[in-house]
Amino acid sequence: MKRTTIFADDEVFVGLKRIAQEEGKTLSEIIRQALQKFIDEKYTAKRSISFIGVGRSGHKDISEKCEQLLWKGQSK
Image 1 (cartoon, rainbow, N blue to C red):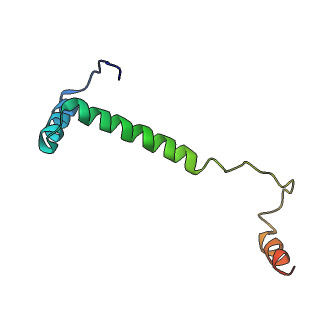
Image 2: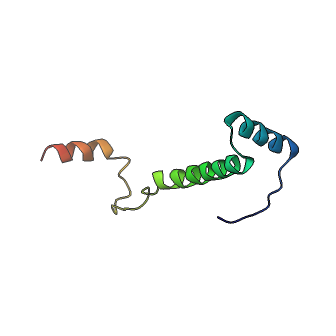
Image 3: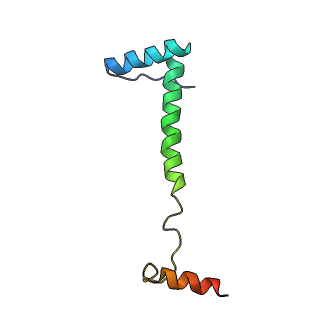
């Protein structure tokens, strides 16, 4: 674990201290949890749509012919 210094507005600091006290945890634990949640949310959002645009069919009119193409695939 690495030690670092952060600067926080007074209201943020007071809020963090209140949460720590309510949960019976240290301020450091609360900050670590908040940072981990932030990281998890950032990476989850990026991973959840990472497949978009991966493949290309070579057809430029798929959105116009989607119904026709879907029905064609079911007739096989």
